[in-house]
Amino acid sequence: MTERERLRRLQFEFAAHIRDPEHAPAPAGVEDRRMQIYRELFYNNLRDLLGRSFPVLKKVLGETAWNEIVRDWLRRHRAQTPLFLELPQEFLAYLQHERQPMSGDPPFMLELAHYEWVELALGIDEREIDDAALDASGDLLEGCPVVSPLAASLAYTWPVHRIAPAYQPAEPPAEPTRLLVYRDRRDEVGFIEINAVTARLLELLDVPPDARRSGRACLLQIAAELAHPEPDAVLSGGLEILSGLQARDVIVGVAPCPDPTDREQPR
Image 1 (cartoon, rainbow, N blue to C red):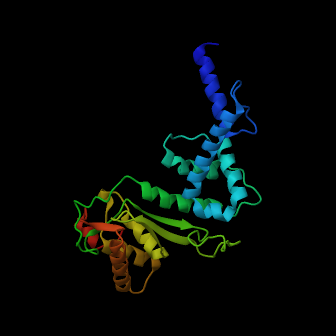
Image 2: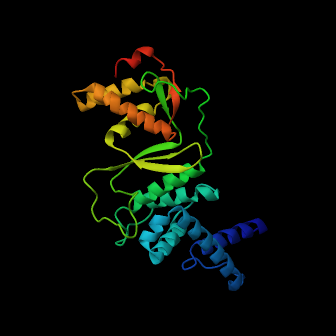
Image 3: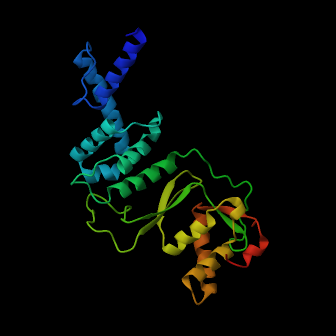
């Protein structure tokens, strides 16, 4: 075995041991006192990072279960990124695809973890709101409202924004929980609970530039989908929704519509 091969083997043994000390032996010839320092630094740093990233999930699970799930993540998962701040996404991938369900797992665990991750991801997203080509005071009905890239419309089976150690529902509500999570121009992350109409409106607006449609066209489509007897009432209520979204920097401005005739008729 060459010196390079021996070094590579030592590195693999070292990494395997600090990930899973109970099942992977330490490299031969290394004092255990020294290995203990690495074991503790490695585990404690990652456990604390995940604890800060998923604080509600950690509290709901409790300290013992949390330590067990972190250790299982280290044992099973092979990260696809070396970036420290992206490790919470790796933890979410582990929950989605690798974790073997345990009897004590709360039924909302995966959705709660996803919700907490979205908040974190928006907070560290390097993109900025670019509204240079948009009209901040444009007509939200006649023009094409543009949705911020730092906004996410989400739907969950469980009321993830309310879950806490004191509130852990055993059954999901009859209706899904729809949440809008966003980061505003002050780089503050916020969320609001939205209804099905607002979620559908955001879906119709959040499209590539060449597919944009006016606020009026999108609201008229929603009125048609609902078979609403008074489309003008939908337009009035929809304008109020659009104005509220713009005040929160979810709508970042108004662009010209690709096809002016689209302002009149829904697709």
